[in-house]
Image (cartoon, rainbow, N blue to C red; front, side, top):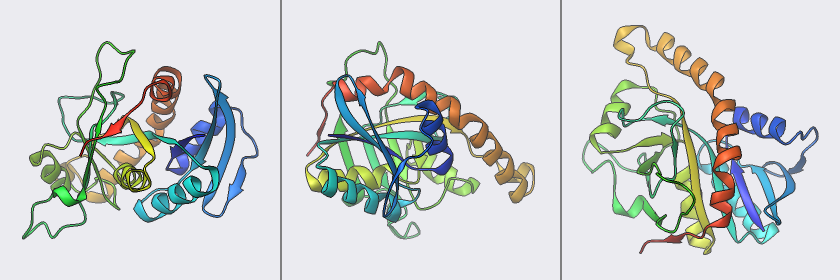
Length: 231
């Protein structure tokens, strides 16, 4: 069975509305529902935001539903400003950047990095890819944004790199589809709270647009194609 992991509450709401699900089933760490796509039985599950919650949910689903593949679907913050809001990505490199002491260590270390080969992806004329960075916090502080940009990070979120790591450790295939919902706002142009509120409002407004685009135009490609981890 294929699992579709959705992290944030607002993203899950958009998925339930997309599939007209009024009463999803529950598991100890969240909610789920089953459906069929391309003749395959799939299980959509709300894994929860931040690394501990999504890792535990992913492991539970692998153990209880014998998942052979997980597709992570959701929004992200844009870091590389050559891209724009609503651009869709199939990242090929995943890093956890809050596992180091950045004052004395590299922000991105090989020991917290997983790479996926997406060269087999067929069906798109052009594919946005790059490095996705995950931490247990959103990219709101301008210094965090600059640090990620200086380390050539493309997009950032709070779950994908952790899910990919869990999948790799379990020998389960994984691929991630992310769409930019917002960019960090320089708090020097206003108060930090105002910058955060403005960014959050943009995220809330854009989330359903991103999720619907992924489901309509990219999810079947992720299901049809196979992906492997780079050693």
